[in-house]
Image 1: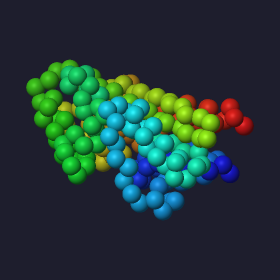
Image 2: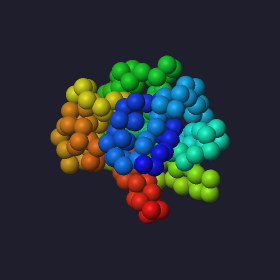
Image 3: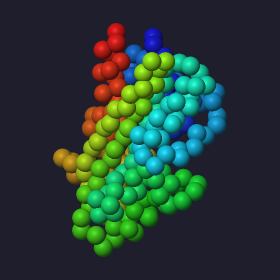
Image 4: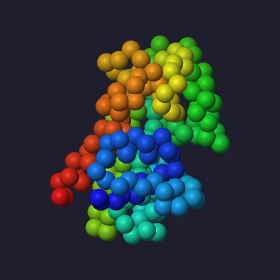
Length: 192
């Protein structure tokens, strides 16, 4: 079984990825006993994904991928975007982020948004990025307890329920991260 390091401490992301990459041995940072946080100092999702993947590759010299994701709200000129995880400040807090977003959109009729993920994949001879996007709208209240982050507020196009209400399998079939992962998966399969 081929092993890949997924440069994240987010267990929710790891669980989602392991459902897609069943024939690969995906190892999170915790599983390789790497406990430090990697600062996301870039100004773009692509920049942060590359920063994290390169950092771990330099330490372990083995194929690694990392992602950065953001919720981009049209009425907020793309915010919170690259700052999605820290939208309400430090420390990261999903509930405060969701409350701040609802407050920012309180009197807004345009609730169009998109989730965007960029995955950076690094090997000795390769540095690639794969993007995944899912469009939708922001609900007017928290709905559902599933998922994480902004999932209880995001209603993907074609559905009436938020990611927080939809079964995990449905979210996995259409999410931004799944879309980006499918592109990485296709690339990896093309190498065999």
